[in-house]
Length: 348
Image 1 (cartoon, rainbow, N blue to C red):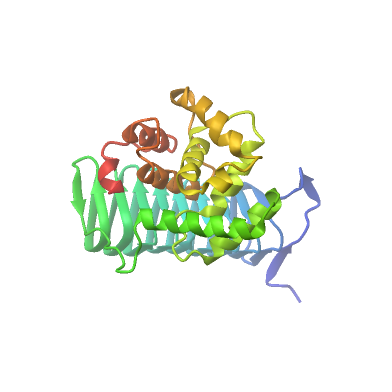
Image 2: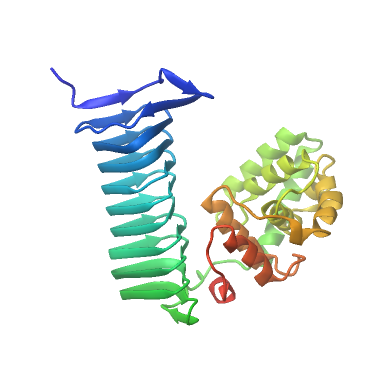
């Protein structure tokens, strides 16, 4: 009896520990039990299920796609339904009836329904026929069009925003400096930035006093614990402290993203952490050296989350950053090929 699915376990072809296989055209379900890289002109099947990350160097034409990790496609994606537990990163166009993911990056997106827990970034156009909902922001290098319901914290379209229907959130059309929709209102119990910074410093200082002398691993564990108790998660404490420790092993702050992380950490972390013996040189020596040559440092982000967090830091730490706010945002947006004109309106 013929099986109606094909399973991919450890590949016979391993390059640098990466499982490789050739793209196939099949009417069966493909199940990838490990992280895989698929190489070929087109991967075609009735459905694809990936237990971990899946990378396709080529195009994808599959009815139903479910990936439990990150889904990277160099070419185009055509599907009826795409569900991804982490990010979808597509070098070409995505065409699908329904798309769901943590973060989405593509050249163009055409879909009926798009649901995203993070940010949506397209180099050209987003075309939504029924509903787009994201918990964070939408950025389009050219435009946003569609009908139905549009829900996001912020949306930026460089050239045009032509959406017919309900717009919840603030949308900016940079070409004309026009705004659409209404900015989301703060929750009644939402705390101010100063309140949250003060609360963080008091909590960390108290916990460090309890812990006494600790090493780096214990410091990371402590901050991880504190991050888990933070209802707002506004400062991404865990990301900051782990990044600072990684930077501390380098010779210098190598790029503007690292610089922004150091600035944010210096603003919100208590003196007990900033003065910790293995990281204090980051804030004392490396930061000063970086600020002497900021205009020569490149900006790059490895993920959509890092890019979005960098924008947040610029907004929060405008007074601490040694470049003008608009100039720093220019570096960030230019790194993904999107023109920047009046992002000040977007960050309000």
